Length: 231
Ligand code: PGA
Image (cartoon, rainbow, N blue to C red; front, side):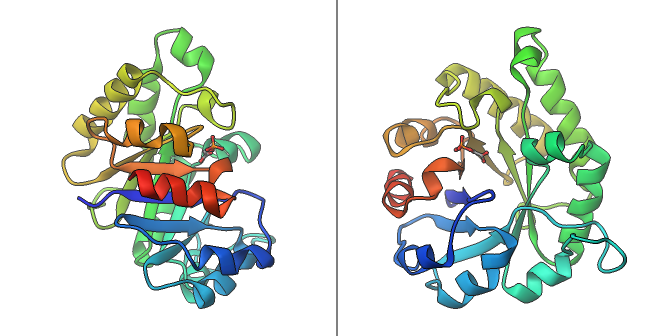
């Protein structure tokens, strides 16, 4: 299976950055997930090798949901993927596994690839509950009928996101093995949380790590290209 390197710009990025991103190149699959407002511009500007995704979608196709964006709208804008259940959405917007499941079903119905994020907090890890928490997130938020073509799992320990702290190789290996057991062969499992050009090669070489979901380091083309080169 081909390694997938996905950038999550979060609420960052400007149109002026897009021409630089159109130069990204590599042997792996490359995905950039900018804010909603830049999806169509990036889709128009990107090279064929770069795919464009969104960072969320609503569970409904249309309706009275002020401020929300639906899966059909993302598809029309040129997105092929959508990140769902990121820990920042789970925390900032109170998203539960049920919410994420409904959104993932909407994404799949539209032919978008759902990148479902899971991961434990530091308190949950300290309490020895990391596996239990992530197992429950997988059981609760992955739609039935999802396939390796329509589903990607991103393991992102909350305490490693934007902190510069990275789990040990043993911790990553253990969590990815647990996710692999639950999700089956073929589905890509990304690691996310403080991936940088300097640590990407080592992380991507671990068993059952099929790529990365990159936040901060995806905002600078040189750093993101460095991570792509490590894949
Ligand atoms: P980070 O974020 O790379 O900045 O730690 C990862 C993510 O939240 O997807």
